[in-house]
Image (tube, rainbow, N blue to C red):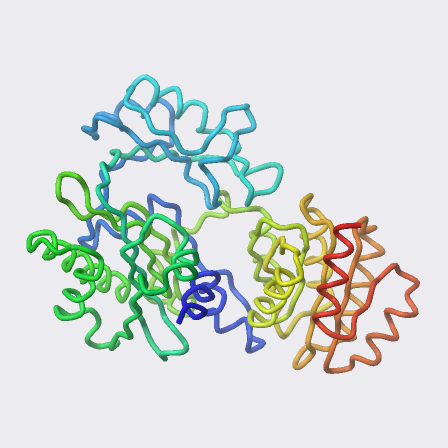
Length: 424
């Protein structure tokens, strides 16, 4: 169960993207800004902290007038992790601030709005901040974790809960697996009173009044999960406040692209200006890309193989810089564009290509690799492992290309060479 929980929550959005492994046209799942997710939660009866959005500095005072807080939380609204430790192109530090001073709020918004926020998950140019959220600060007594997730192993939705919220769920799973409970849900019944009560008690809501509030929050979360065709609805943390309220402080929602025709109003919220430019470029060429913290750029076909590739890199002491799945119907130009995205990332010190040719033709991959190496004038080591359809011709093309390409016979060898290349 530990492996199942950690792996699914590590990259569930990609694992649940059916198109990534069947050769169909790939699409990048809709991602919403924090305030948009909280709007959805609030509209479905889930309790969230009061907040207001500022998209023009002159509107800051009117936004503050809507709040009645002793302390404010100010957050730059961009689709990137690590906002709190980020910095802006004007020198201002931190995309998340807490203050009790109303005047300080105005100064913070001024330093955020219209400037580019750089974090460990963005490019060196960062992402332009077009909206800032000002919210009531919440006095937290306890933090818990709740997630509703479509799970292939259970052939349907599951509810994952832990009384240890506010931290990495993988850490909880590794160190204290008994503090995670996974309950398969009937798609028609969902979270009923019995399940809601059982989970509320497990989360530590033993006081009858607080228990009833927690049960209602869980049932409202299920309603939202179904109403918006979600793949994942993660609340971390779901908190008990010092004034005895149950509030969803932060949320991550993944949507099913196949339900776009039912959820047009949600997909209309999508805005490329708030995304990492690399993800936007990848989506334009039907590639699945997610930035990570490491220095080994990965180009792989298939979500499962991509996950395995990243795992083996870690096993040998390396760190993946990204998740990049080119899919099963990849063309030569897509390989070139994938290399362009990787080569423009300053964190990438080596590129590892791991392709198993089933539907995809290894020779197509090889031609794309050679063209990219020449035209982009790659300045980092390149390790290539190819296997499957037309692999003999592919290896011949690479051998005769006179390009500086390290080849490997299997994934383990490829990962070792990539890790060594980084260190040298």
